Image (cartoon, rainbow, N blue to C red; front, side, top):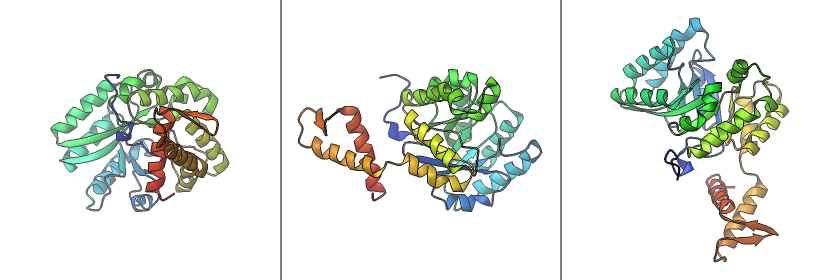
Length: 290
């Protein structure tokens, strides 16, 4: 086993079909609407969704949200500013003041190497803050170091917009395919999962569906969204279909009568990878009463 890998993959924050809904830190009132949605996680964004002159306002709003007695810590994620920035340092100070002995999901943008995450985790532990990290891979160096980053994080988010700007390439599927593939492979080797970047054309639901389908085929388990109207499409694409669920159930039923774990079903060989996938699909279907 790779010494950097954590098993099983179910430990990943993005282990199941997943939609992550962003809302801007300057609009904390959106938290209640976001948490009432069907998105598996909601992320209050202190970085890209906040202008430089509004950072302090967003940080104060995040402090208030973190102090809510009914905060759903299991689903809530806070995206802070880059660790090596002035705003990132202020975000950390805020966390240290407001969240002692708190377990929190933090999204860390522009992660270039694992050492910065490890150092950040240790500094938070000194303040009795225990963080789960979602690392955003959105730089050339981050893509190059994605495997070691995945060994430190609990999930990866592919940040294609910043990466395309850094590389001077088009923000389209073909141009970013190599980088997306690197992120998926790194997550797999790290024993975690990755979700894809948001689709930025809000009214283009067909485009969202096509990109989501391509991302699922590549190995992403979900997609971030910046508008609630995208949640349904993302769930439809990344959740197992009726035919996939039916096939998975038949695989497990057939397995009960097989001795060696490798058999033929409907003219197709079934071996350990499909059996493992079928087990996960059936577990998800049972949980969702499908």
